[in-house]
Length: 341
Ligand code: AMP
Ligand code: MG
Image 1: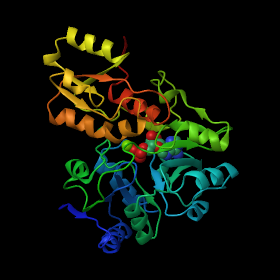
Image 2: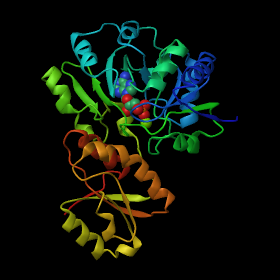
Image 3: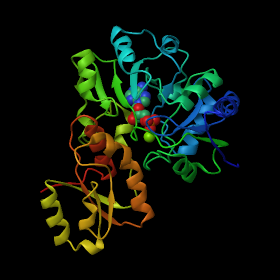
């Protein structure tokens, strides 16, 4: 299959979105930009189309997908009930990088939810994503547009690298603004619980709902035999080919640790301004600035591979605000290898 890439501008937005919408109505899979990362979209009501997403990504069948809608009103048909908390969160954060999990209605096929009784739903703010959902005329199931296990793509080139020959169309809407996937919060338990941190922070959620729990698996490996609240959390994730180790401590401690290891042989993943101290370095944002770190993390992981890194020592992000999302992704990219300095 030939993969066409269309650069979307304000002038061609309507025609590009219609071309994508027609393919989606036809049961095809299309790569689309969102404000979090690029998504691999298919008609959420079409089980055969949804199965093509799993095939293109090599995604395990038991890892459910997020359903994307263009406006809040579309939520009602997809869930059994819209609780007050969902209305409050949508009011505060939609359109935007927040996914809510609710008990699903019969309209959602099992393939989307991997057999669970709940469905994950998000209303993205990216104008291209919004236009494509509207033109398709159906909700779109869309995971991140990477091969399963690889870092999520934040631009059309990285989608092309992973999906060339597997899907008919990628819309290029520029660099994703947030750079990590959406915050996932479940409203299907007794209390709201964050299953995956993202661009909407735990602090922001608590400002709206007051009581919000954070799942243990956000910063810890799942215990042997435990059932993942969010199936995606149990898989190897975001992993570049290089072996990453996170070093927790000050920059001085980090530098001393790497120098003692023979810096020539290793790569470092550090913050802006720190790279001059190392022969092989890739940066991911400004120290303590979670937004800038999120924005750079997945690209930095791909750049490490492009530069042939074998072993990487990574600076540790803070666990506050968007930093928690960055730490959550980096931990998985590092297969939970952390050294306390
Ligand atoms: P991605 O599509 O790559 O952004 O990943 C979506 C994430 O949401 C994965 O970690 C899924 O396991 C999680 N997810 C999707 N639907 C559900 C659901 N119904 N219940 C719990 N987690 C879900
Ligand atoms: Mg993903």
